[in-house]
Image 1 (cartoon, rainbow, N blue to C red):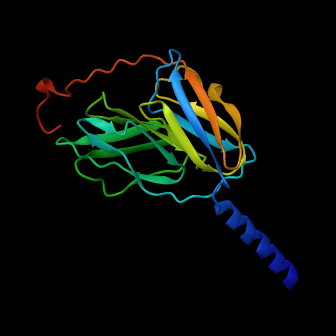
Image 2: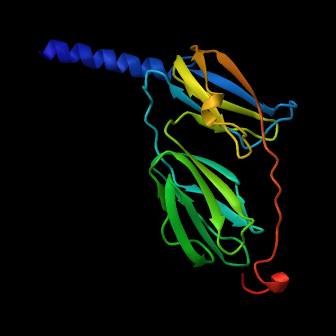
Length: 221
């Protein structure tokens, strides 16, 4: 029995060391554009291993700020189970809420930093709003997988340090004019190599109008 335990320990140690060696993982380079090839920023790219084997990661506290009567960043991606604080760095007060099935909550009218963060313990999309400034809309995408990234202004995102295996990829964007499931594609990640994936999404136009919540737009709100 002692010999068997020793062999099992050596095998596990070898596996862990190998996983940490340079080139032991791969990466995915994602490019997301609209149908006219214009890069799309704030597109969320999720990679889910087909075999369901996902490396556990820590869940650091994240943050969505409020600046100039807007949520910053507009799109935030977090791992399920993460906590998020909502500091208000505006000179006016806000009342943040969400009625989304993935997380329903409300932070009563406040300035500064709320005393308690919000825990996002269910995967899915959470749409944020402000009861005082109704043009304020933000998004928290709660991922069931630790392998995710968000595109920059160039429409590109990199998912690094992926264990070699097959993944199902999908994309979400605030203006996506289709189901998220329709974006799914399967890709094989090879040790020490980069895999490329690209999407040309059909998007809808969104008109955004800022207006004062009270006459004249003045006051403490």
